[in-house]
Length: 550
RNA sequence: GGGCACGUGGCCUAGCAUGGAUAGGGCAACAGCCUCCUAAGCUGUAAACCAGGGGUCCAAAUCCCCUCGUGCCCGCCA
Image (cartoon, rainbow, N blue to C red; front, side, top):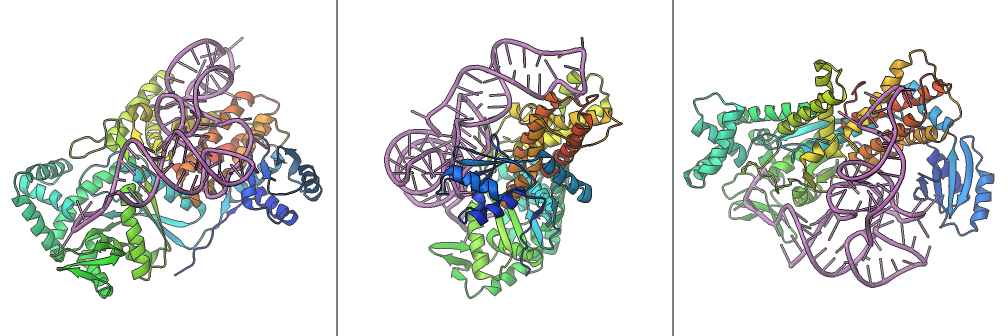
């Protein structure tokens, strides 16, 4: 197995440069003592730890640290504030963009990371609860990809177990003579659940099919894969609307078909305990069952095999899971590390449930909002708004914009909230395109594009910067710190919040600094092009589709 | 009962890892700003005992303990 390189972002990291110098002066200074300042200075050193008269500390630092990039150093309330020359920050960004066409630049690591997400049972359409998984997973994929990892995504297709068997049986019982379609499959599936309440032979039939399945009945497995594929295809096409395409699909049945589950059980046979014919692992006073009395395998066993399979090709494995899987994941993690040669790094990203105002989502009670519903309504709402705000736009343009808004807006509303938090889905919030929203960011971008379009004969230059320009430069410069934070904690919401900050700062600049036909035009155009680049870069990570006009 | 999360103005949310400068945004409300680069924008007003209590500390939304509320898990389901 490879060791995972600790990736670094490549740019002129003034915080790091300063930290190294300060460490030479005061040994007990650590990275935590320097903050990215907001209102007081660009970088801030807390000097509570330094047991010296603050005035003396200031003098010492002023004497020792005389780098070109530093504009001034001030003392205020036990903080030493460092001001960086805006032109230096701007140069840092632009040199990187010029050379590598991105800021910051990255290493391309050779280690491979697999992000497993969505993995919904292919027994129904994907709804707004499940898309939190997909959106978080896809954003983490984009984030790591941008950071320089070789990342791919994977969907674990659960085509074994009682749910999909019910899907298959529903078709055989109620729609046998029809070609399987999404509609008749869902109908059959729901009827199975309804009818088994009164007809207990259904349970017996499911049990028999499960045994045939586990014994590797190839014909049955193929038939079930066929019906599952139809539902899976509908999930795929829904996800595609919001820009999510999963790189690889792994079918659970393959592990049964090729005997992987049994092989794994043999490998740890000496560790297994029995209760009747059922096999389990004893961990403390917990019993983790791997097989049933009838010999069929349980999810836990198949999940072990799946993770061993992932570890064969990937150095880092990331699972996106609902919070209801916390215990399962904890047990799985323990078992993989204590009973197997499992050397890959593994992370579990959990997210809180999405509920509706009417309560918990329930497929069987019909209390769900599907992704397709949400997408259609968002399109509809955005078209309505565009017709009012942009009466001159033609249909083709309106369609293009509304699609970009729908996809971006759905993703952004989910991703901007910390994954730990439970979410209550509200139409009024989903269809609001103002404030902390994707359209707000898209709008800022369109404003920048519009100016660039109208100023064909511009040059780009450096100069002196007023407070709005300085704020914008600084906010752009600190992009790598947010990027790193988002990666270190696998938290795409950090990126989302950065983008709102960046857009807000841009709008402030836009309102206060005229560009076209202004004496300062060339200097400001440079800010504009830099802003455009960074917004594009970050938008790609959270899945916002930027367009020139909105 | 045990475990894991979450609780910040009327509503949503950032900050909590690494304690430190007036708790930052947004929605809704109210008052303003388009002969000037896209008003999906901007400015201003009002609104928060950071769930409650205790503790540690020069300093607590942040760390520790207890309590309350909500959700999730505690299956030979997935």
